[in-house]
Image (cartoon, rainbow, N blue to C red; front, side, top):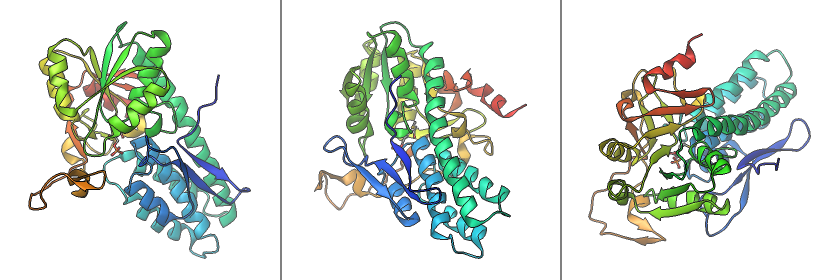
Length: 348
Ligand code: MRU
């Protein structure tokens, strides 16, 4: 099997040094370039400015952020508390995707469990754990893909939103992992990718990824989905998620909710594909999910040019919450669940 190129990976320089290397997603498809992130401040900025984006990928960025925090504090006499402070700072870069918090917590557990060891030993363990999380992410996505392929009818056209692909994870993707796995079995499947304004992850990233894999992909604008559903041209909708509540309510890129309503009206199945780490066991419903508000320039400026008068009001929520009742199923690495069953993943 060919080795998957990682979207984000820790580059080791000995056992206790190194840095995070990631694909710069702000410049695709114009350029394909990797950047090296060597400080917690740069990691905060990389997540905030979306050099790295997508819930599982920013989770790994968070895990790397804790390693960088540990390296920066390697001489500290109050190591655990200093690392925790820096970890909280990285965690504050984006509020909605729970994977960021989840992966940072995983790293802080390593710090806590090993607090009696030397700073160098803890750094070594943090690096090992970060690389383990990277590898596990790819394995999890492949399982999601395997389970998800079972709900894709032969010759289906799949509508997706934003980018829940290899670029949004360490590799393979969640929603696009399902597409990839379905494509391995049936070369006739097709994808409709919407643009996903304002940041254009669908247009810039999803079409880039899928066409590179030879998958038949059609780009549509965000307002076109209901039209194509009405024409019978969409068979199933599959998207990712940034945070799922215990009742199945799911936050994902702004516009997902509208797509789910349109799918329901047209009797088209609507699936979320996400790892267990995207489910937040601490929240009962989607009302508790904090929605990131981003800057107005993302809406008003395209290719460095304003598209509207500067007198207009602008509001730019990055995500919306799709109510559980609109979701046919949640595809995870443990199988496919009805939204009202997803809480079972946390019961022994
Ligand atoms: O703002 P973004 O690009 O980070 O938003 C990403 C999404 O909404 C994805 O659909 C989600 O993170 C799932 S990625 C596997």
